[in-house]
Image (cartoon, rainbow, N blue to C red; front, side, top):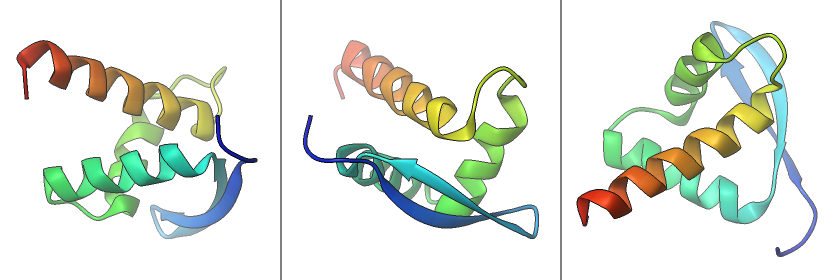
Length: 77
């Protein structure tokens, strides 16, 4: 893994929040948002709405990126 988590601000439902992710996760997260043609804040809000209370937003984003990447690899994209 490369480096420490990087903290960035996101806006979820009109409220600012900070999320710390390692740079490779930020790059993948931005790429997924671009591929889906949605702003990164919209994608983060979608993830936030589906995560459980026991999971933090940063962890939920990491899991989303992993699962998205795995599904895409299975489909051969």
